[in-house]
Structures are given as C-alpha cells and as structure tokens.
Figure 1 (cartoon, each protein chain N blue to C red):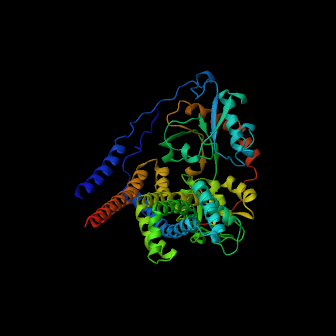
Figure 2 (cartoon, helix red, strand yellow; figure 1 turned 120 degrees about the vertical axis):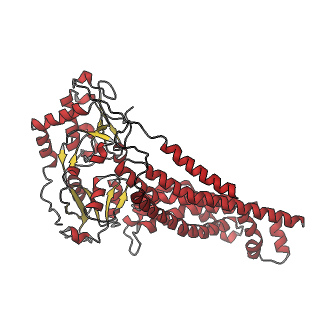
Figure 3 (cartoon, rainbow over the protein chains, first blue to last red; figure 1 turned 90 degrees about the vertical axis):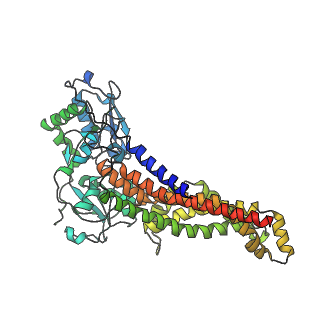
Length: 281
Length: 236
C-alpha cells in the first residue's frame, strides 16, 4: 500500500504546483491621450457598453430598467456617456455579478457601476474612475429585532449581521464591529434571510439601506450608520485593469462633478437619504 | 491581454490567516455530511423497502414513495435548498426553526434520500428471486428473508455507488452556503474576494481531496478484500 500513499501525495503536490506555475506576469497599459469619441477603444466600436447588477435596485436603478435612465446610477451612467460623446441610443447595457466584476480579468463591459467602493485591494485588480458618490455603511433591520433601538457599536456585540460576499459591508462587520458575519451570494439572499429573521441585521450602503428598510422589508428600520472610515465609502465606476478608457471616464466624472450636473442627479435620486443616526463607538 | 500588476493571484497567501477560516468551514461540511448521512441512510432504506414491496395493502405508500423519489431526484438541489432554507421560514409556521444550518441539512437530506433510495432499491432488485424463495422455504418469514438474506447481499453490491453518493454529499454540503452558512468553499471565497489571491480555493480543494481520496481508496480495498474472502470461501 506504500505506493498508493505515495501516489496520492504526488498527485496532490503536482496539482498544487501545476496551478502555482500559472502565475500571471505584470503588464500595465498606458491610457491613450485623446478622449474623442472616435478614439475611444470601446468593446463595441461606436457603442458604449455599461454594466450593472441583476437585479439593480432602487434608488440606483428604478424598476431594474437602466435603459430608462431613471435612478441614480442609471442617470450617472448616461451623464458620463453624454460627456464622452455617446447618445442614448449608443449605450448598451449588460448585467454582471458584483463579485465577478471586481475580479481580475477581461470584462465584457466598458465600465460597470453597482456601488463599487474604491479600495486599495480592488485597485490592484481593476481600475476605478474618480468617485461619483460617497456613501457610509448602514445596518438594516426590522422593528422588534434584537438590535432595534441600539445606538452604539458596543450594544451590537451579540448581533448576527449579514452582508454579501466581496463587499466592503462584509469587511465593515469584521473590522469595525468585530463580529462574525453571515455571508451571502448577494444582497437579495441577505434580504431573504433578514425577512425570515435568520439574521438580526444586514449591512449595506446607506441609500440601499433606505430602500430596503422602506420598501423591501416589512417594518424595516435603519439601526444606524457605521462611522465613516474614509476611503472605503466612495463609489467609483469600475473598468478593466489598465483600460484605455479609465482616464477618459475619470475625466467625464470630473466634468459632471465640476459643472454641477452630478450634484443635481444626486439631489433628484438620493435626496431623501439623510438623517440616520451614526452609531457611537 | 490585461493582467493584474502588483498582486500575484496564485501565490501562497499568509497561511495563518486563510487556513484556520477554511478549516473551520470544512468542519461545517463534515458535520453536515455525517449528520445528513445518517438521516439519509435511514430514510433511503425505508423508501427503498417500500418501493420493493409487493403487498397490495401498501399500494398508497408505494405510490407516495415513488412520487417522492421522482420529485426530489428530479429537482435541482440548489432549488430545494433555497425553497427549504428561505421559503419555508417565510411561511411563519409556529415552532418551526429558522436556523439555516438545520434547514440546509434538511434540504440536502430530502434530495439525497431520493438518490440513495434508488441505489439501495437497485441493490435489492439485483438479488435473485431464488434467494428469497430459498429463505422462505427454510421457514423464514418474508420480513426475516429481507432482513437476513436479501438486504445483506443487496447493500454489499451497492457499496461503490453508495460511496459515490457519500463523496458527492460531502461536496454538495457546500451549496448550503447560499443560505449564509460559512463552509469551506465560502470561507475560501471570502478570502479570495478580499485580496484577489486565489490560493484559498486551492487550499479548500486540497482539503476536500485529503478526505475524499483516502476514503475512496480505503473502501476500494475493503471491497476487494471482502470479495477475495468470499471467493476463497466458495472454493474451500
């Protein structure tokens, strides 16, 4: 039987080495200087392919129909497209998962927006435009839950909180609250668990928290916002690592920020999102 | 092609950070497999016995058992997990647990009982009718013939496919993670999605193989020794 054991070990080792041998080499592409529409290297020439989540939620996208331009992110997407010189007809929407989009590799979109917080770790895997929104994290729950009425982080030490995998919300539960989270594939599964009272609260960004507590969850409440950590709260448009479009898309976001159109889009779609208490340490 | 700079996606990551979380996740997989496995064995045996009975009095039960196997063998496991894990608690039935580990295990047991019942049934049907006739002629009752003559031969014949199902069960317990349970696969995914270093997936894969490969080899050996013994008995 000695040979058999040897074979098992050899196979396991071979498997591990075979895979580690596939390490990728470094490469970065410099962005092209011109941001004229004709010079933009989009996935489909003459078209701008924009991605979001499936389903996309209010207030980011209204009725899961980004083509309408209704909803904060849909409006931002079209504002950026207009800035880059694309008409409404020249925008094509595709859907991706959150987790799949922040992963390194080739993408099937020119840029993706579904509340991607800009973090250092993610910047190693994908490109981000300059931020188009700054959102704190918040805890959604329901009336009468174990964490209803809690006002400090210390009061939450026995809470069972959930978040979607690969999100900064998940990191916040571990690093800011020091709790062991329940981890879901996406927010939709987390909402199911919260509705079933299988978790006490779900951590999401504040605008999503307003939607979930107001519309999706019966007797929903926002327990509070987590204190800001700065960088992790800013949303950016996500592009392929080293994309030739990054500088142009950043330029477009900066332009709509500068001319005030981003502020008016924010007021239109996220105006009610104020006045939730920040949790005390 | 555009690839990531700075981070090397397959390089070994700090073991002290990833390893314990994946191991803790694997403990969940193993617990679900063992507890689920026992429940599956009992339910599947009952279903198989019911489906192989011939008594007209048991016809309604035979019908129910057949319908059960058809439904749970035919429906995707992931659907059953979502239905039981999220759908059943949504009914707000008093006194019913909403614990996702318990509900997830129930969902896996429901599906795998159907698979395993069919394996055991095929084993029972593979035992020649003369065995039963001989047992009855020796004065054994119908139940005794099943218990002491048919089942021991039937189960022995289906050990390899049963082992197949056991290994699948161990792997499929990972699907319960969609309910928010952190198993080995999910623990690896959390680590990988945080750093974009995919070594945790390899770690999880190797841990699963460390269980499944020795298990398969052991059972193979067991079966071979047993059949050699049986053959030599016959020659003696």
